[in-house]
Length: 358
Image 1 (cartoon, rainbow, N blue to C red):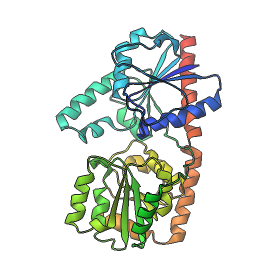
Image 2: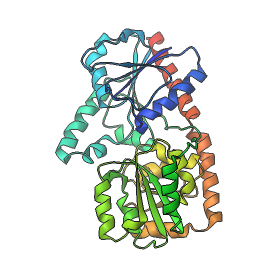
Image 3: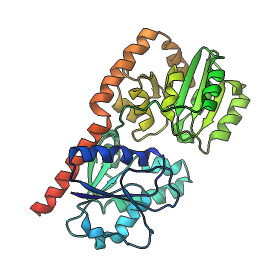
């Protein structure tokens, strides 16, 4: 089996690192799989231990008819497939992964009108795929009446998180900051409105003994800083900025929170669970599907009072540990990179069989 992966860029966003985790596990399942990775942007911050090829969006220079599976991810790769599909051999089968709820993502970046137009355009591109992979049953239901292509659910997966070495500067920064407080709330995110981090900032007014550590960067950082100033909680929030070695931060947290307003299947949450960190999330449908309340408790979306109530409820170490272990068992059964690879591999095999039976 020959597989081509088409990605917009090689960077550390979860929609890209997913494939870095996936590919080695596929090779373990079948060492004869041949894999090429194609990408558009010049800047490379994520290195794959496989053949990668920088291509021009308009060149169509890939030997497209050589591949059994062409797996794209992102709007530009989807457009590229749509424009160049005629170049592919009749045996090629096209797969794409949709990592989120498209309209909600666009609405977070653009006006409602532009979000509607961009969503319509992207959804039409998906009809050129033999299979569209979504991350949850919630997402499958969301897309069922929006696209004609076959829709398959494959949960994101992540291997056990490496406890990467933290820089000496970060160690000193974290130790000095968290030592001032009784409890530490942590999160890792692209800091945007859709992540709902303002709920935690507002909650700090009530949660006097707590501090909040944000690892990540994004368009809402300055807005959150202003909000913290207005609420006079700025001294209890630490903005770390983007870091690659997020595994080294979990040891400082009493709990990991994800107050998102919309999510596909966030690898950051899976990483937190895999590191045996207690997690608390908003009650959006994605999180409800992924974990039971006795594994990962929930609070009402955008409800600061309920958020505080849930936080204060879980000061009991026994109650916390019980949920940590249950969530970890769910992770090992459903959300590892090995489980994800096996599901993708089975889908690829099934699609290849449709060629032979045609």
